[in-house]
Image (cartoon, rainbow, N blue to C red; front, side, top):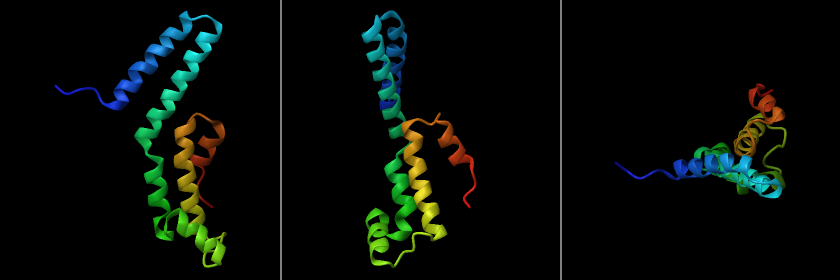
Length: 114
C-alpha cells in the first residue's frame, strides 16, 4: 500500500475546505472558498501540465522563443494556419487549468479550427 498522490492530498484538503466553508462565518467562509478554488486550479495544473502542452504545440516552430523570433524576423507569418492552430492549442491548454467551466472556453474548445 502506497502513500496518497499529490493530487489526492490536494483533493482531500479541497473537500475539507468545501465542507468547512458552510460552517464558517462570512469572511472566513469566503476565504475557505477562495482557498478551495486555488487548490482546484493547482490540481488541474498538475494533472493537465499546460507547460508541456504548450511546448509540444509550439515545438515545430522552435517553441515560444522560436515563434517570437520568427514573427519578429518575418520568417513566420502571423496568419499561418498551422501556427495559429498551435497557438490556439497552447492557449486552450492554459485556459483549461484556470476554469474549464467558462462558457467561452467551452465554445472555443469545441469549435473546429477554421
